[in-house]
Image 1 (tube, rainbow, N blue to C red):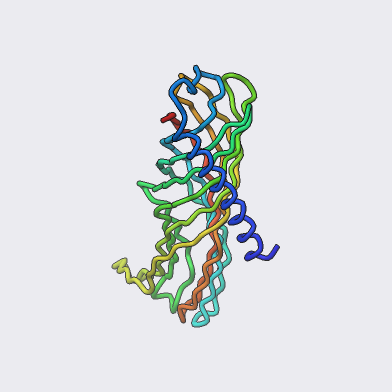
Image 2 (spheres, rainbow, N blue to C red; image 1 turned 90 degrees about the horizontal axis):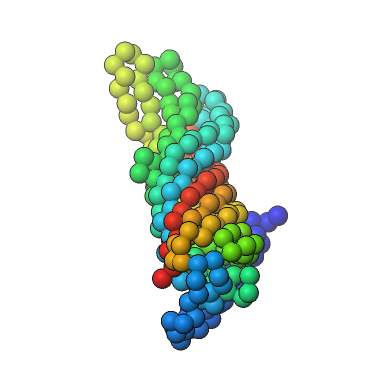
Length: 246
């Protein structure tokens, strides 16, 4: 599928979600306190804040060619780390079904760093690529279905923007271990998010959530002279969250 078509379709879906959440907010602002029901029962409006803890499994698909040494690298490099985040959700409940939009922010305190060996020049230098994921801002549409008084299923369709630092460096092979940075830059890549989850009602105002979300970022391609580099990140979030009604 053409990338621009895929991205435009997701953007239109998000616009629709935002329109629904705007409608929900206008109704919420007029709601009285007696519209709030007891734990496990349906609420007409949805306004929530979530605190998220994620285990993150990332794959960095490298393609590197260095014409100076005629060396080509193609590697899918996995990294596992953690991420913490916060989100704000707004929506409307229609019987057992909810139409919800959320905006969120995530950061990895220990960072998501992938290092790959690139090649050797004259047996004197070893070259390496290093990619580090820093933070993600995302916008999701998360329709939900209440299957019992205590449990809800929900889906995730959204878009995320992630900041990366990329560096090519070399290490001298003369016993000194001298390191030199050759190229370094920072950029933001964006991509589609899709996933699903389950929520458990704990109290009248608190839910416990579990979700799995896959984010496929666009490909970054730069001609650095020596070498030229492409990478395409895939990010899988395995998350647990505490969700509080406002």
